[in-house]
Length: 117
Image (cartoon, rainbow, N blue to C red; front, side):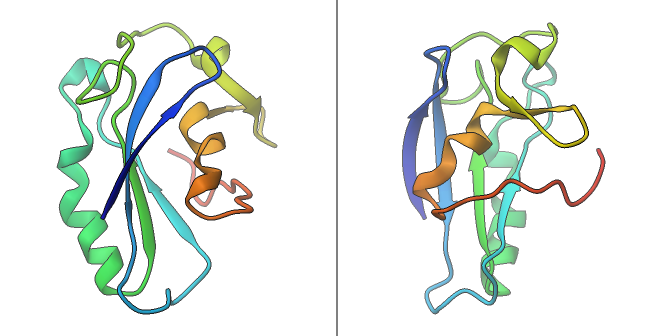
């Protein structure tokens, strides 16, 4: 596991963890895991078991503390994300800055939504 921090376009520092298999990954897929919403007590530590299970199956995974959670700076908010995103997705929904900022983990990273929340 590798721990890093990235800065969002609005200056918030996010704490991220990259989980990689010891051998070559099974796929080029990078799974970005998002914890329950910060206001409800979520933090990336809740996803350790899921990330570990993915690595055991040969996948890479990324977890991060949302703004105001765990080791990330900023404040949690129930305000719309639109002002805190880097770009809209094809569906018009915003893509969170951590995803856009994670090029360090799997360059070149092309965000794709695999399932609707």
